[in-house]
Length: 52
Image (tube, rainbow, N blue to C red):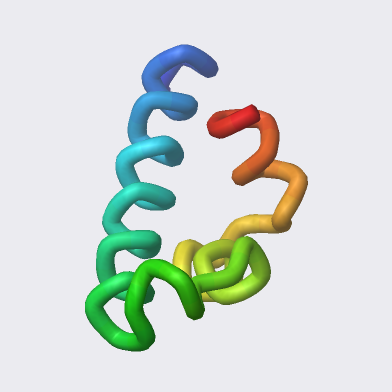
């Protein structure tokens, strides 16, 4: 069982990977929070929590 801190680190990495895929797919300027959240499989609020 992972600790909340470890889970947060893993979730943050998942979000960064999803963002990188979106940047590659549509470009930085066209990438949206909604698209990154969808790609990462997390709610948009989670992105704002990890990246205020």
